[in-house]
Length: 446
Image (tube, rainbow, N blue to C red; front, side, top):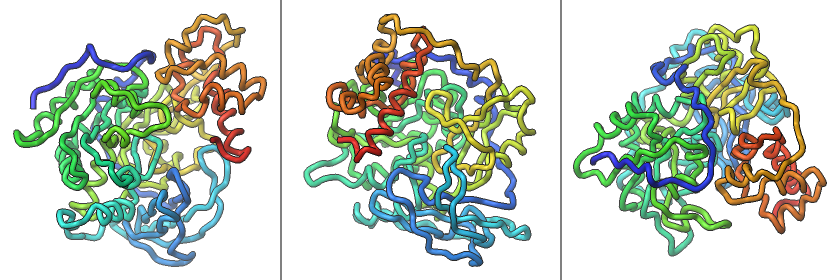
């Protein structure tokens, strides 16, 4: 199918940060060598934590189920290596807190080859059976949110999915893991799309890719068959293009009303990595036990795109990349706009880890904050048409309920566009994030 160039179609507002993708955009995906110790947190996805089905001292093989889903909005965990379960207990997570996890010591004599498995039959599965298979595979949204993928395919009675929207925008600066997946694994991506189209009964699929990835667009177009109801849509480079509501507006020129989900419009949105994971499960029997991670930033000694087993300590990944430059001051998991600063390099790579970025004093120095000058730039930046400056003032005054009831703070996705646009260097998104955390701890936001 011919390339659709839709520069005249996009979403309103947004910002244009520097891409900084040149460090890794042309770096082929490499595999990180297997290490000694792996930590698999039970709650590395949105929803209920998984429940262990193994015990300390038990031998496990690569790809074996080690924790089952704790609820419907939850997913399974599998061993990333062949080895032995050493402990189940609290381990440090990315935000510095300690949460339940399964620790596995890798067998130093194992080849760590995935045991051969025949392709899994999917054509004859009912939708409910297919949903159970995706949950069993441990597949989540791979763009960073780690929302269990199978939940998106479970629809209320009377609803159906007509459009499958594939998110290949990768609008966060520095990150190129999706870019390389589209270039190097287009067959698996299209295979995942075809499986999902068939099982959801969707009429078409659209792959949204920002125009700064022409090689990825060509690779995908080269895999689309004449009878595939699949199109590649080239999108303007703008942040946060990869937010699902923004992507829907850009590709289909439709808006998802506040309080509704894409499925209410008959649309399912999946990241490219999620669809590759679906193909891996049904074609090779490989659950989600590894993912592609971008290591980049001014403090990275060897920027790279890497296949990393889940549970690998960040320190081991950076060691493979020749460590950090001496001037590094901060390491972020994810992208610079929405990522999480790490409290320790000993935290593990998770299902939602898209990047490990190292920054120096120049990028992390806290700029002097000035009073709000009511310039309106944060309003122009916010793609959800909120009033960020007012939310920030209310947050400082700890008027959290007013933020929720009058100004819809829970609609904020914390993309950081407002903070990026603010000439007074007000930490708007941090104030909003604190308010949302307080609302949740006060009994749950309404």
